[in-house]
Length: 119
Image 1: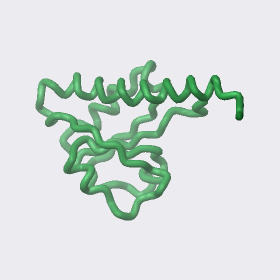
Image 2 (image 1 turned 30 degrees about the vertical axis):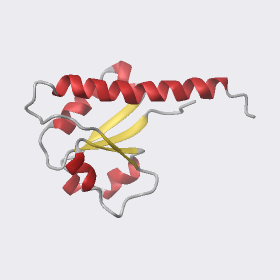
Image 3 (image 1 turned 135 degrees about the horizontal axis):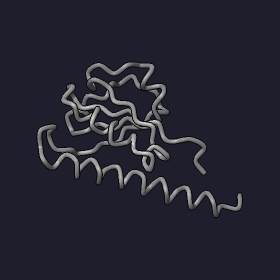
Image 4 (image 1 turned 90 degrees about the vertical axis):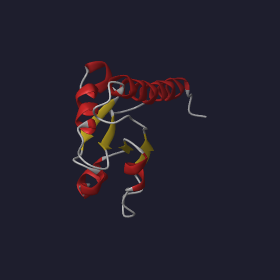
């Protein structure tokens, strides 16, 4: 079972506001039980300390995923979401769906852990 929420660093290629939007949405108590989200200004300006803190680095589109620095901790795994642009009316639904999928997977794993008898 999870001992703490997953530490998730979110970034777009450039600071377009989507990472901050994801972090605001993740502050919802139902989501923050599973995720601790930290936005970063851009994939181009990743802080090494943030990369060491994170369990997951969520690139918010393909361009951001391609900008993953070669030098990153092996403990920080890359996850790619394909979110629409920051000014798209589809952004809220896309972020909600991506978070729902991520948390759904975590819930399934926690159930498996609860029923694991250690064998």
